[in-house]
Image 1 (cartoon, one colour):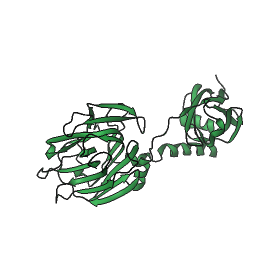
Image 2 (cartoon, one colour):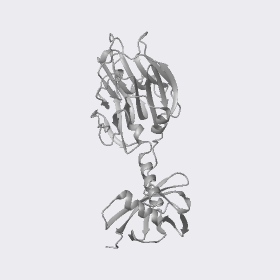
Image 3 (cartoon, one colour):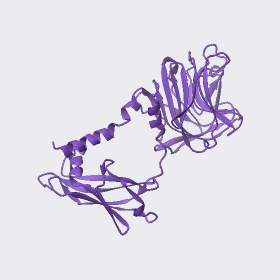
Image 4 (cartoon, helix red, strand yellow):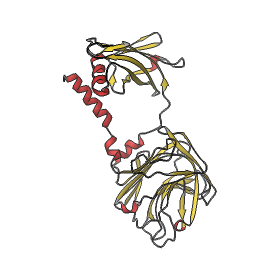
Length: 365
């Protein structure tokens, strides 16, 4: 195997694996809310959505929108989670994206809550993220772990409600690590507190909470929730930053892509694979950041030129053939669809694809 092919294969493996292994380690529940409330972590902790809810565009694919109701009761939109005994973990992390749009009570509402609170004779410990205050948006964000009654040993991190928090996506993390509670907003720590977590009532949900040992419920949250992850370990600061980096992107512009040659012989000795990129009329190819363009999310442009309203770019033919032969591992001859992605200079993404015929080294059609 020559050095060029080895390099392409190594780059593909690195690109495919970077950042994935650590963020699945210790994952006990993951709810992407792509049209349902299923857990895709493999742990089987599927949730159930109730009443006033719908699935809309979110941070990554879809998210769930909940519309709560009143001061007490569970008559509005909420999600019931299977109870996970967080108190049995020396450390754990809850990560979630929230688009907070309102509250149905002037006593605030919770985005996520495990356990019940108040006067539970040892069963009052809770773990929660939410808003607490008197009227939306004149409130505060809270991260709680433990018995929040006087002398109960619970910890709480308070953050004055940011002026730019409501109505947009924000990433929130509660990290509990052997008695130290830390709250994070958009990848940054917003405070710490000590906590003691004992036994917990077996109730859990999104957009809802329980009081009086579970005897009183509430679902006061109005807004959207996405990408909820629960870990049985404390994530590092860099891991939390990675999760916070999943910021919503604008929809990609659909570009017209024409790849030449239409038929690629893996035995050919040519130098280039040429790609012609044309954007919709509202956009100008002169605004494309050429350095951002990738073929199959991996191969970079080697040469470019603007011809009228079309951007012509060239990829190294040997690199493309090595990718098709070693990464795709398809049986030839075959039709292969190649994806081209990139960004405009203002960060707006574009993408498009074209299908070419690939034949084997013997040149069989």
